[in-house]
Image 1 (tube, helix red, strand yellow):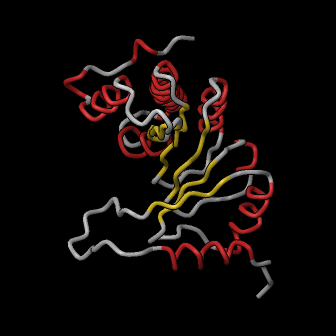
Image 2: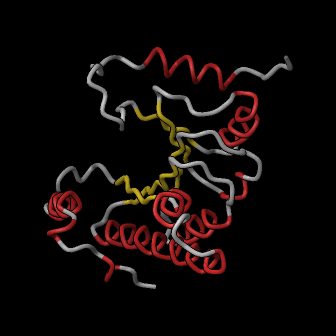
Length: 202
């Protein structure tokens, strides 16, 4: 399918248009990958619809939310590919989620377009079953490592052994008047070393 008609109008997506202008102008041709972003279905559902939709319409509205977000992500992927770059798209799920079916639908669509696919999480959730998503990346906040080690380590260690990659962000997304730029490498090294340690009972 062609999702390019979903491209936003310049007046409503200035950042996207600026990026498109830069890529069209041939800036940094050696940098092939472009990071993209789409909000996850659980976050959109819980933030805007869960308390406004009657129970009998929940299934329909959840499906529409997922399809809309998937189409937006696919449009980004196709646009970046049309500009000669390799898309890496992250599904952002800051809200707690448990149902993986909607995420799986989006991941499968994005991967069908040969995009790298990751998920950003900043809340605790059930790690069971995540392997079926077939993700390439997991993205976490370096300043708020968002999971319990005894729950996450077995999955993440298998994920890394299978060729997956873990990415940490270091810029807070919540305004913090006391935040100052600093070297996060010691924190990242500590977290990476922790992932490499075998888990012990206790």
